[in-house]
Length: 200
Image (tube, rainbow, N blue to C red; front, side, top):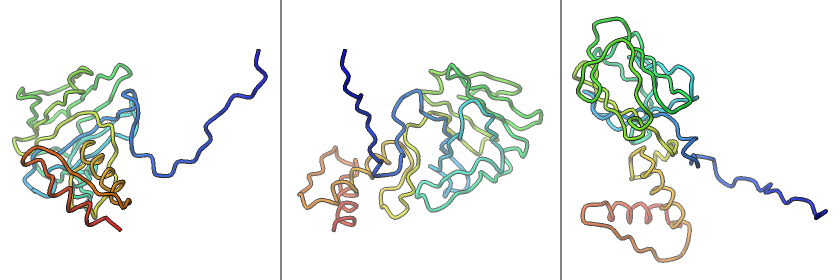
């Protein structure tokens, strides 16, 4: 039997925690796919706590704009002031309670009302909610939280774009040459511009 003390990692984080490491910790998110106010398209909101009711209405939640310079509610008459309440269950499914009014809502092209439970697999893939034929939202899980990089020319709130911005910041802080590879139209030039802009 060893009498040596167990080593514990007590290092301090050198950067804010913005990556959610395990699948069990991924959070519920809503992304604006279409809105009459084009500034809201690509905006994202994330649910603060699993299991707690999350109201979706004209004034809530607040969506961080894709360029990360604004935070706005949906604020459109196509969506009711009375909230649709979303609640994630322990098994990963999401229960939706729609308000008892005449608001038109579709999920994946089917009109819905009352209560509905979406399976965990469906939410993992992403479910499209359309309100009043004017607002399209994607209900999905996100593994990276918005990072507030408003000065980056690489706009977007998806987990992939947050990772790209972090990688740009990481390589721009070095004196090493950088080779950006990718298919035609994938944004190599934009990444190169971002690396150049952030270089010392």
